[in-house]
Length: 299
Image (cartoon, rainbow, N blue to C red; front, side, top):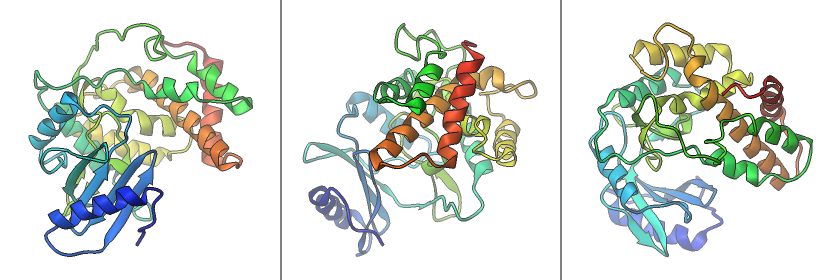
């Protein structure tokens, strides 16, 4: 059980909040402590201190309200956010995260996304907005062959993703998670899976929720069988992000390329911070960037 953290003062405050909300006494456990986010479990409650530089005003409150209307799909925060030492803090019910040593729930994730994408979009739902993370990460790259490969791939993306022009109107606008991967799922007590982390949830193109597995598949990191399980389950559940029968890459090309570049930039930055060489999956993402830049601008 992990209780060490680089944020000991904040940890103590979150534990105090957790003890006041949990149904039974329990020892605290750090579930996540990266990128300025600290998540602590206390019994049946999870207490999360969100990133200090994220916007947590009215749109976030609307996302909390919206998540509360989707209990069969999303785990919503318990009550209104708190402010602790200048940080936004939320509480939620605990669920078991995905265990990478077990069979991965690709079908369950696909069905949850298809269900979310099939919900009606409330008029007050906040916009997911442009995928700004890729441009932000690329701007942080230093010098080197891998960094250059990522930058060359980045310039093939549409100008609106690079932040140079306004985003065009979405052809298909649905309710989307906005940052989906298997780490955004938990299994609740009845054995069913739910989505978590609603900070990016809102109106947007549902193809972006499929972009990360599509990017990993196109880079050769995600095995073809896993990709087919995911895509097949999404289509079988009536998911609207891709055509039911035709080529899915007509919808997924730009989102998948963007996420491949984003993941590659993250890999380079992380390896540089840790003063190590890229591992095999990370190098595969750089190789994908080389192929993207060689193909040119397909947008």
